[in-house]
Length: 288
Length: 266
Image 1: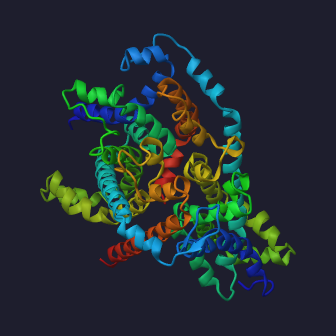
Image 2: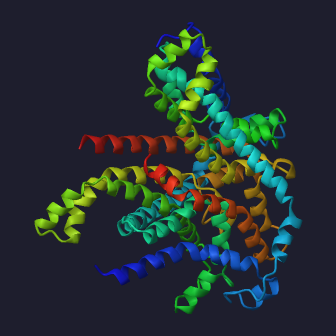
Image 3: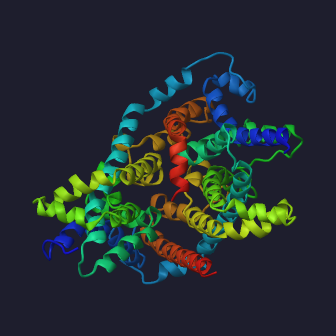
């Protein structure tokens, strides 16, 4: 349609454009600029060139933050997808009981991260936690889930899987319901057992859904912060210092805005790469 | 069909998600002495509301609740008010730079709060706006997701409808807010719910942008319960957690069917 006046569309876009400029694009440039300075928010910034980046790399901080976040994300994505798929296969059926169980699983996705984190902080308490005691009562080892550097990151990943499995489940159920029943019936008539029906009929048709769930949860879990802040504060001995938490510490504990900005820039580039990967996966799946 | 086995399995799955909530509620009715003496005793010895009283004494719960609700309402409302004209221009009007404008809106999905908070904090600190409702609301005034959703919905509204309204002498503002907005009610309602819940639950941005009680939000306040004093008083933390999660769980229980369909039908 023709606008009423040549100016009209720009007037309509103005609030959006203004907010995007002030709170998205300018901050990105500002961060890139600040990353070349040393600044504690109190004294005037001092130009240091690429020193922040060099230090970030040389100190091993960047590498540590990246590997921690990467391990966390891989465990979360794999765990929530497998669990979500299993739940979808078991719960994709009519009946009020199945509907109740679906609701129970999905409820964790609806409550806040703070609620989930506090809940599991108590359940996983080294001494009095119900989960810790249950494991011990069943003859398992006495593990300090959140206090042991060897387990803390995986404990956080487990809690995150508990929260996100419902999201994967709902999307997988939607994917399952798009598969025509005739295909299953035809495969059964041809003598295919349940496992063969899954590998030859269900899974190939579910792959687009899996690609969507996998890439969106990968990008989301890369931005993890809340569970870390509430449950472990990056510890013990930095075992759970993921990317965003490392940036947060730089600003609010160490008052090193310049260094934090250089991490922000690196983090943005990583997210950009992940998104390009996501687009590539989606394109490819459409091409098949 | 092996029905009994299936029912047991599904029951175990439900328990894995529901027992933690149950444990939270049970703990909130215990006393500190009970928790120390027998942490895994299932039932509290009596029904005491001391822990809840302690939560309301430790912090201004109602103010936090009000702050959180005002913030989430303001964000969702502004997002829709801003996205409607933009979505209308992007979907219905021909103008130079339309494709670029749309691309820039979608590109902001790449710049989440976790990337923006350092520079935005520094910017707001310079103009003295940290720890204000403005700092909580304005940075989220535009939603790429909302703009995209509204644009898509407007694409399926026939041009003739808008042209007829123009003939009748309606202003563009009237067309957007008076004619198109009511037409998009289902889309706007779904987006409003999504945005409201997301920001009501948000922990990260209020944590970074607030420094005291004035505009602190409920998730932040409840999380602080754990950090007070020495030794964690779990009955009080869990009572706070019930206060925080009960509204969300109640709304979810009432709207479950509708909500699950909305998520799946993306």
